Length: 210
Image (tube, rainbow, N blue to C red):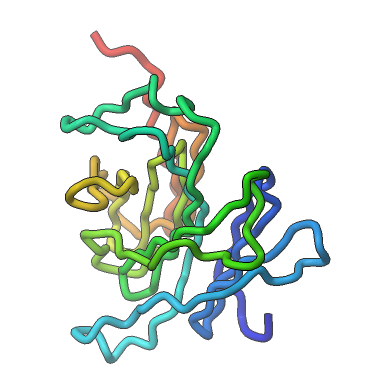
């Protein structure tokens, strides 16, 4: 890699991993071929209004999105019948910067669902809006089409990253944390986060409401 690593993620079913560095590079690696690189890219961090920040990608996560139909309706409710309606999916690499921005880079897959070594990036990179107000320290994907982001602005967001007519959309936002968050975990039904005050917060969506 050659530079300090800031975040890593892996996707076993596609035999690939992603590594971000303080040099600003995002590397896509093979998990089978002695960690050889499929390719790399530089997210366009450090927006003009924040030139004073030495920006770099601080977090990374893989996100799958279904290619058959829309994943969400206008009210933001999930169409469960469409998730898995097709065996084909699109793979995204989401990177969160220390300037609060998040970018999504599509990854090209072969018919056997491995990264295309000849042309690993299928489409141009696109931003996820709105940006956070502080460094994005953690990203995770609970299920296809969804990305959860959190960081030093003391907020957590759940976003739909499928490409609709208006692009990506923030579905929910959790605010009120007293400190910035350091990591996220999810099993698709619960969101677990830890903060700089040694507190673990669990949002459990499995409980039925009356």
